[in-house]
Structures are given as C-alpha cells and as structure tokens.
Amino acid sequence: MDIASLFSGCGGLDLGFERAGFNLVFANDIDPDTWETFNANHKQGILDKRSITEVSPSDIPEVVGIIGGPPCQSWSLAGAMRGICDPRGKLFYEYVRLLEAKKPLFFLAENVPGIVSSAHIQEFKRIIEKLSSLGYKVSYKVVNARDYGVPQDRKRVIVVGYHNKLGKPFSFPDPTHKGKLLTLKEAIGDLPPAVPAMEKNRANSSLEVPNHEYMNGGFSTIYMSRNRRRSWDEQSFTIQAGGRHAPIHPGAEPMSKLGPDSWEFSGSKSNVPRRLSVRECARIQTFPDDFIFYYKSVASGYKLIGNAVPVRLAEAIAKKIKQDLQDYIGKKDGR
Image 1 (cartoon, rainbow, N blue to C red):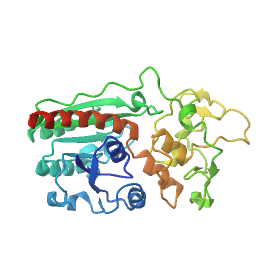
Image 2: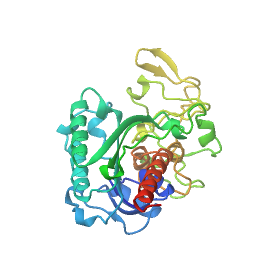
Image 3: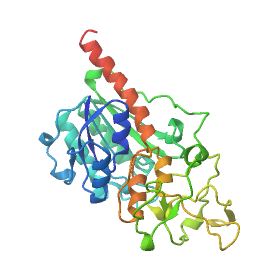
C-alpha cells in the first residue's frame, strides 16, 4: 500500500507507517536541516525539497493515503498562538489542497493540542468541515503518546479521515501500554555516559554511540520556572524541538521548588546537571538506534527529533488503518 508524506521532517511518522507495512513513495519538506537525515534513513529519491506551495498534485504518485504534520508553531500554547494569521498556520490549507486533488482512501494529520484550544477551536472546526466536504469521515482525538509505548508525556491531536467509500469512520486503537507505561530506565538506562557537544555546541565528529551528545550552556529563567527532571521510574516530559529546553537527565538530583515559577538544581553548585543527549531524546521518541541523525549544530539534532511524531505512536495508528483498508479491499474484491 503506497502512501505519500507531507511536512515529512526527519521521518518519524513515516517510519511508523513503514513499520506497519506501508510503502512510502513520496515525501516533501523544505527545511534543508532535514534532508540528509531523511535520505539516510528512508528510500533515496522520494524526497521533494520544494515548498509545499510549489507541489502539484501530479507530482505525487497514486497513493492510498497521505500523512503529515503541518507546522505546529502557530498553534502551540507555548508560542505566540497566531494560528491561521501566521503564514505557517495557513500551510494546513496546502495540505487540504493536495488532499482534495488526490482523494486517497485515507489521510492523517498531526498537530499540537493548542490547535483545539479555545483560541483556535473555531478555525480548527472550519478545517474539519472542509475536510469532511471533500468526501471524508473525519475523526480526531487528543492522544498521549505514553499510552502507546512511548516513554514520554506527549499529547498531540491526531486527525484521521476515511474516504466515504470505506463506509465507516476511523476508530482510534486502544492504548497498548495503559497500566504498564514504559519508563525512562527502560528506555535509556543502558546507555553509557553521554559526551558534551564541542565548542559553540558543534557536533562531535565521532561518537561511540551515534548522536549521544548533549548541549552545553546555561539555563534560562523560563527553563528554571518549572521542574525539568523526571525520575528513572517515570516518563519524560515532552521532548521539544530545541536543545535549550531538553529535560534534565534522570540521574541528576531532584529539583527544588523555591516559589511560584521558580526552581533550582539541588546538590553541589559545581555539579550542574546535564540535559538529555540527542540520542536519549531519540530513544524517548522511540527512534531505533540505527536511525542516525545528521547535523553540524547539536541544536539541529534536538530540533529534528522534537519535531517528529513518536515512531511507536505512528505505528500503532498505522496498523489500525492498514487493517481497516485490508478489510475494505477484501470486501470490494468479494473475499
């Protein structure tokens, strides 16, 4: 079953679908920082590097599905919340444009919970109405990746549309790990000590464990306004698209609360805890160790990983979609 990917990034969502048995035949991302990593970990020749605004429907092969995560910064509760007033927010409609022309059997779009916040819910409902008008039964839900084998508190909005031909809407799969959540100890406890980044946070040229390096530098007032450490037997905070905000390694001493929006590191002042490494963040996003990230600045490595959809979450949803498609094709063929 062939699929196309838009706003592909490094390809976390794509990898989850590939693991579920889908065949990725087209991908698109304009960000040069993603290209080498995507091409090194996916089939060569399928990545289109233009702006999505320049992509014609005829550029995309015939596929059963289109997947992708339109830029989320415009809708993020941690950002300016400009939504559709931000050019990045309007890119959601470019996704709709290609979907309307191709009309695959299904589509999937992923975004941050802010898109269904009170500030943006009306625009989100208009997007859903537009998608429905194209001939799709549209389902959406705020899911937490930790319920699907991801050692991380990460809530995201998943929108799935099934073409009316299928005769039913998508139903989200039951959690695979509710009641038995994967811990940080299970996810990263076996890794050796990480290596600090080079001067000016440049990437190390050679590492025993690929990408197992962490960002240097101080911690901002915003960073110190919250607890940034989870223990070994918990799940990580959300992995964000920036090394400055990467959580503290669970081996550090617990942080102490001084007052409203004010925390400090415990223990010796000379023993400042380190951030999670790029590889640790990748593990927490459930990328396999043979998925290598390519970057010159360590900050870019964190960005690649933080912008991705956790692989196991993508795979769990993709398996449900594949089963529904197989059932539909079987009925259509009289099997």
